[in-house]
Image (cartoon, rainbow, N blue to C red; front, side):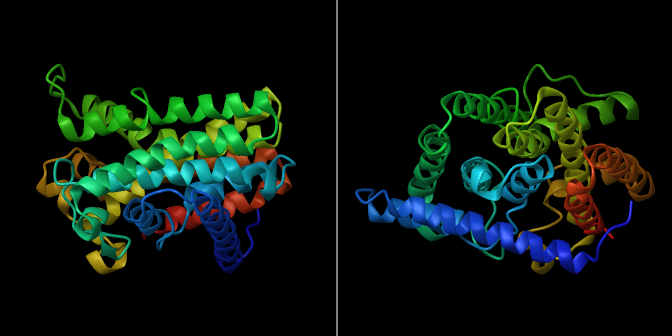
Amino acid sequence: MQLQSSQNITERLDACAKAADQYLAAWLDTFAHTPRQLKDAIAYSLLGPGKRIRPALTILCAEAVGGTMAAALPAAGSLELIHCFSLVHDDLPAMDDDDLRRGRPTNHKVFGEATAILAGDAMHTLAFELLATRVPDARMAVRLVQELADATGPQGMIGGQVLDTCHPTEEKPFTTSAEGLTKLQTIHRMKTGALIKAACRMGAISAAADDATVQTVDQLGCAIGLAFQIVDDMLDVTASDAAMGKRTGKDAEAGKLTYPGLLGMDETRRHLAAQVAIAEAMVKHLGSAANPLAQLVHYLADRGH
């Protein structure tokens, strides 16, 4: 598969991010009676710096199967709301206790813990309201709501956060590297991968794709989600705080299970390459309209080098 220049994908990502930001900013402005402090806290995290990878995936997957950016924007916006809600809560002292996010002070450092918690709660609620009110086709809206709920809930992102952060009492320690890898992949597929897979699926659903196409996009999303988290694990070891826009090295400090910690860097890179190959195969199956997705896969994977 011949890829276009990386400059093309960065420009496409910028266009997707700009469209999502404008859409969300205009929608947020319609909530005229929201307390100012709450609205400012939401906007601080929702509209602050960021690549908007999940909205971009939604838009690119929709376009890859014959849809449009306009039709995909409600789904794209809902995913960014959920992602930002998760970051605000993840940064709290009771969770990962971070002071820096996307190169700026975290939400609770600016607005206080109480407002940050409530801003996260509000974004979680707003994500589903956006789908319920801005997707014209009622059946499609219900399906998108279900997709987002599945990805976000106890068997998705929030459940994965529990496994990663709270160390459940029923959890048994692994005794072999194979057991550790299975546990690690479960955490990653739930905590990070579920929302990335949902971004891909919701893009295809927004384009009224058939079930077979949604399943292909599902496999693409699974591979991208795991690759994304593998790279994040690598960068937590190799990148600086300034480059990442957040504190690095904290996973090792906290004794968290990571790919480099479990397998070493060389084997981690092999696992990353395997997921990239799966993603490429799924993109090829979708056809030439999906070429920007292939560029995006390489763009994300190359962050780790």
